[in-house]
Image (cartoon, rainbow, N blue to C red; front, side, top):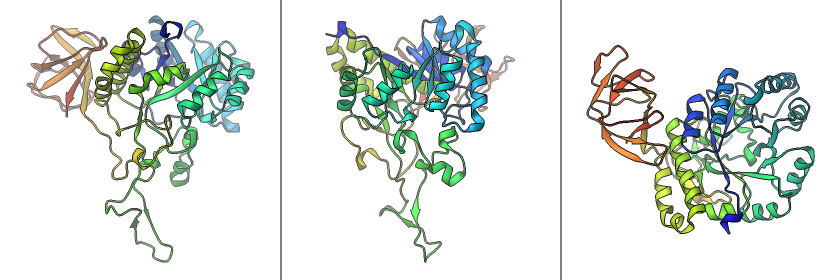
Length: 413
């Protein structure tokens, strides 16, 4: 019976303070964030220590949790800095992180010494593929392990049955897939000197590749018959929104979404859709079954590379790869998030150009989507504008309807 099963946590990524607030408002139970150092998204905007404290406080004010990534493969020169970093996080007091996400045993040891009051979650980077690995980390004090993406639902179910009941399983259910085993990639470092395992991945797996025969330098031959070349490592994105019952049955405690470098529109779209799918399933499984196609249609409105179920049901085949391009499918453009109202106009920071007379959509945290028209735009001095061509400009807009803070404006492509 579902009444006997605890609803899984919905864990959403946040690359900055804006997306953190969006994730919380649009339905996340928890967010995971990273500072400027020691996480695996060095190219993300990331959080200053001040913003990190503000973000964690914001999450806590809504009764939600915030986890901080410290999952690099550390070298000797990193260790003292990591020790200092953990001490600084501890000094946040009540607004310290709810957990640290760690992959390196040395970093884990430092966390146990410096911040034992903060839970330790073991990153997918630690290659967590079996129940003995979970038991190992549990004995050392970890409360949660993020499963390797290479595990099937059957394996996860068996794993759940053989680890302590209080040990939590966190599993990626949506977002970009990494071509390397558990994300431990050497391609970027080999080609560019930027180490993916230190957070500087150049996404070499998304590049176009040809082969060159040793005695014929300069002759670039496609790896397959398509004259445009091939993207031999380019995986489709993971999406499990139509398989919530199977994920719950496998005993997964936290449904994790990938995307700390994504926009607030992506975060809002994915968070509110998975929130509705999870809630619908637990309130009325039949309602969930009836609405499954609608959930999928809605998450497709976020930026994606087409969808796959990854390793959950079987090992991926060529059908789970994209060989002819490396671009995203983009159904909607993100125009901005409502910040406040001034003289009847709504303030937002413009993300993409739009014009007076454009038809746009407003998406709301409660799941509503409303179509409306842009009636008027001014700059911050009140000067009328027919369009807003300058990214990140603060503008004021009449949408012909009442809006609320955190409503997001998007336009169909």
